[in-house]
Every structure is written in C-alpha cells, then in structure tokens.
Image (cartoon, rainbow, N blue to C red; front, side):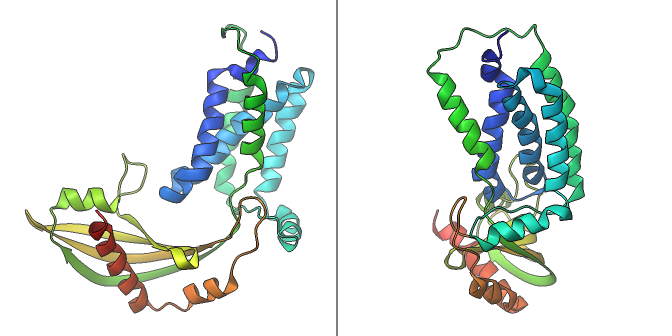
Length: 265
C-alpha cells in the first residue's frame, strides 16, 4: 500500500472526525470527563499517523516525538509558551491534568494500524487528497478557546417543582445522553457573559404530572474567550461578575434557566 492510500483508511478518517466533532460540539454540549479525554485520544491517534504519511521513512521518530511533545504540552513546563501566546492574543489553551497522559496508550495502536499491510483500500479519487489534508490541518490547529475556569463547590438546598412527569423532565433538561453525561449534570448558560455554570441536580417524582428538581451542588463556572484561534481575550469584567455571584443569585439563575427550558419547547 502506498503512503498516499494511508490517508483514506477508515480509522484514521474516523479519528479526525471525532477530533473535530468533540472540539467543536461535544465539549460544549456535553461537558464531562469523557469529552475531556476524547480529543487527546483521537488527536494522538491521528497526528503522528498523518505526518507518517508524508515521511514514511521516519515513522518511529515521528511517533516518539509526538509522545514527548504531548507530555510537554500537558505539563506545567509549557506554561511560559501559553503566557507568551496569550500576550499576543493567540487563543491557545489547555488544562494541566496528568491523567490526560493515559491517552499515550493510543500511540502504539496508531503505529500498529499504520504498519498493517493487509488492510485493503479502494483506489481513491485524487480530488479528495487536498480536502483531507486541509481538514486534518484545521483539526490540528483549531485549538480550544482560552477560558477562565474556577471552582465554586457550593452546597444548595434549592428546590423547584415542574408540572411535568419525571421522564419528560429528564429529557428536556438533558441531564443524561446515553450515559455520556453523568446523570445529574446540568449547565446554566449566561450568553451575555459568555459564561456557563455547571451544577449537580437530582429529580424526584411527586406524582404522574409533577417532578421536583433539587439543586444539590454548584460546581464551577467558565468564562469563554472570543474568536477561534486568535481572540480578543477573556473579558475580566465577566470573570469578576461570575466571581461575585452569590449562592442565592445562582439559585435564581438556575430557576430561570430551568423554566426557560420548558417555555421554549
């Protein structure tokens, strides 16, 4: 198999698709542990594989260097690079979390897949080659927006009653999606502040037409930067606004958000 045909292999293309859909949609719609790791896994599968297609005689060094760069990227030693980039308005961001390093386990799988010779591929239409290269390049450089994330960890005993049955409330509040989102996770969006507050809620069936919604924990908030790769910065006024919110005010925002979910349906 020629190195060009490697670009059309199913698992490679699937990893690029997963990387894009996770960074551009899933991370924001389903904020949880799984979506936090998917980009690392998909990216580490695709990144060295992609470059190996153009330098097939340097496959081992490419994979080794990819692993080293990933460890550096995820460590605190790379922070000066991020500080420098942010000072020039370049919106790259990452969270130091050494549990992300488990994604390195995908490298030998990717390496083995690249070297498999028995995989057959139909003769591709050459018009797709530049399209695939462009999509891959975009997926590697389109980084997650810079953001300010801060833990709140507030307990709450706020409760509200909805005139809907339990299953309808579960569906409309989107507190689970085929086990992707942990049951009980609920996000309050503050669009005017480019911010969101993550909470932990619980539901209790009152009767066939009523459900009690309890706000158990206020977990954290995030204020998002603007732009895609280059951005104008994180609005410090928005950050201060979020920091100064009282528990009572967040509870009011929670009730408003819950009611809005049903009014808009």
